[in-house]
Image (cartoon, rainbow, N blue to C red; front, side, top):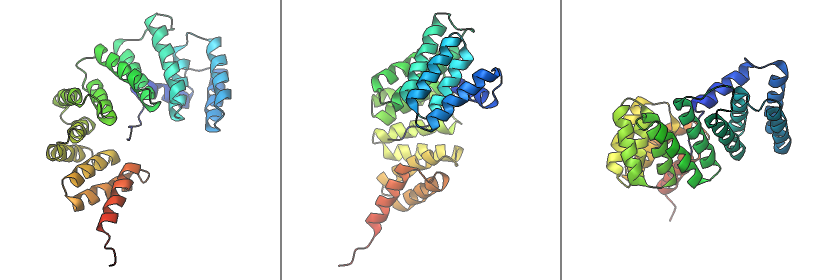
Amino acid sequence: MRLRILLFPVVAAAFSMLVGCSGFDREVSARLHKVDFLLSRSRVAEARREVQSLISRCPDRYDIRASIVSVYFRHRQWSDAAAQIEEILSLGLAGKLDRALHRDELASWYMSLGFALQNAREIERAEQAYKKALALLPENAHVMNTLAYFYAEEGLKLRDALNLARRAAARAPDNGAIIDTLGWVEYKLGRYRSAARTLARAVKLMPDDATLRYHLGAAYLQLGRVQEARIELSKALLLEPGHREADFLLRSIQKRSTVRPK
């Protein structure tokens, strides 16, 4: 299983603020960077204490809390990130932050929560978070796509995933990532011919994405189109040398094609 690593809009904005230190006084900036340093050295308990000390000084500061989440995301501390996001949502919904959160931001935070929980392997809670995002923005293609891709990756509710992916693709027919999700759901359902056509369209839209190339290669392999599969998987590894799934499939092809001496 491969989870797409991304920064959702609210987390990305917080990360940009942290990098530039804009909007923060010198002490807050220094302490946020200290948390980042501690996590980079795997000193997680110390980082948590620093986070709690910082939050206790200004519990209603949205920008500080969002930046803490961005640091946890960077270091893949998924459970800690999820806990911080849940606090942001709880305080935001109660009107206890120093700024109001509009509907789009709430949906983005719920998607970020789902992503963190999914990586922490808390699958049921992740699904509920993604569904809360969809309840806030029921016609948003990106939210539909996120839930559909979650189902595909986890092998859950694939019929629901197909419906969501089709609706998302109808709203964003030129978005390669969204078309890829539709093709990947078709692949998971065993509809390999349809999946290959859809995934080829996604790759045409986003040719420089390693995961899209991997998905297309996997579909070609299921259809017995071995040479085409080899090409796509090789391109995936050129784009992302550490892509484990593409590497595994390519090695399996190479093993099968090796002629063993009698």
